[in-house]
Length: 182
Image (cartoon, rainbow, N blue to C red; front, side, top):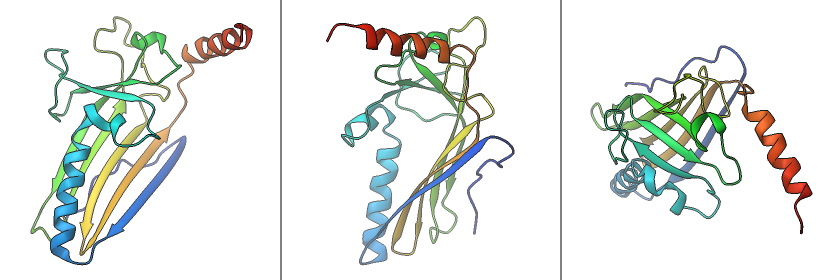
């Protein structure tokens, strides 16, 4: 059985978040698994899947720097977090796809994994990471089926806060919001 490649934890914080849904049969679990994979691959629609997701995500092609819907290693993910405008990323946080795995060997324990790493904005001249974590950090999104159960996981590794310029900007935004008229 092939296992997904989740980066090693070396420094900083980490988290492992797992959700599980079991079906009444393996066949219905296969259908649900396929549906979840389609949703994970629909980055540009993530914000519409739940009222709890406030950020908007846009997949950006690494060659053209234009929006795309294709998962390819090297493509960017632009993140628009409401109320927070990262100055290094022209108002956005940015990550890059660093690994994609499709563990479909034999289809008994299939999985799909996507690993993202904070990065500079595509048009950055100073190569400053435009994200609230440093470039050592990763997030691996993982969907797997084991028997009639589907697991949806997020594994954060080496999470170190990026305080290069975002913290001063956020402090100013916070202070300005307190001083604004009600």
